[in-house]
Length: 446
Ligand code: GLU
Image (tube, rainbow, N blue to C red):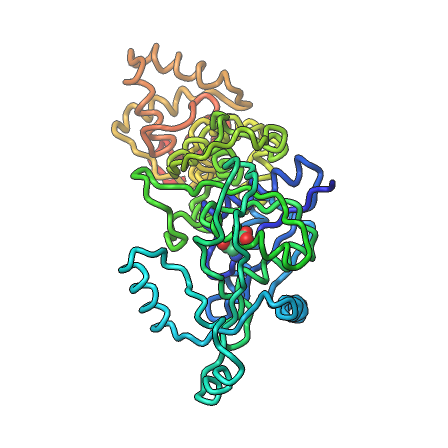
């Protein structure tokens, strides 16, 4: 069997870490199993779906490098839904209902008051043609419910193991709204059938939907796919992450200057038995992917973990990769010695611009003692400079002034960089060059 999976976001908001994690896990599974990855935009909710969000989702997936083999939009597929819905009606699995939301809410309350499960009572099944004609003449439009068959609904979930529902505990789901538009349940199942989806991987907020969907797959003459429901991420306090939390959107993480692989390294491993370690390539995560590593417990998400991994990724980033990433991000593409010198001082790639400026100016020197700076200028070795120049220079300066250690190095650092901390001066000095060094020693902003 060739695996076919889909990631099905609704373009009603930006991707946040929770749904990005689903996107990533679906992708890793597709690549691991040699299957195909469909990006399906669930945009049937016309009031809340926007083109801006659709584009943002594609941009975020592309940033993570989660390439898709196929793409579909539910808004393009209305005729497919109409055809399948007609079949469900013919088979007697859809029935018209006329209750208003207020009536339904009253029914629910009264059932709860009687200690009954708040499922739909199927009153609409008792309506005959005359009743329906009367309701429609009074201006009511029907919504349509799917008639569940009684009995157990069971499946083996790749994450949750055996799952059991009893159809009697579930309400017949509404599949078609009053205005005739199909709702998520039915369009999703029809798409999953028509795109030959073999595995549905999604958040555990859909577990009860899956019970309904299994009956819908069968009613449409298809075998249900395999299901995997991922526990939802929570914050440190165990609360769910809402998609409206802007700070946890991928867009925000990207604008924060984090590396996509830092994000992917965390999201791929949260809630699994693998340790969270920085990975340089998605292929490494593909290799390590295995459903048996996933736990049913809700993983805690902490954005600080991504930041920590980001630091480690940068500190270990080979020059070729750094040059590529810097170019991609429109940052100065530095030379290899420059990268080697500043890499340990970066928590984010864009901080390179600070050190780029230290090497290329302008820097306002902090000159606490002009006499000391003058002596330093006098003893500055001639070019060409190497990494030994620093030692040669400071040895001479030490002999002349009697200063050593921090008392010698800190004033030089403040003059050369304007800062109290930073990359090793022995590597920085040749990058600054003799001319600029002399000007800074002279107190000039250079
Ligand atoms: N659009 C649905 C969601 O974002 C898709 C769920 C599914 O994967 O079927 O929750």
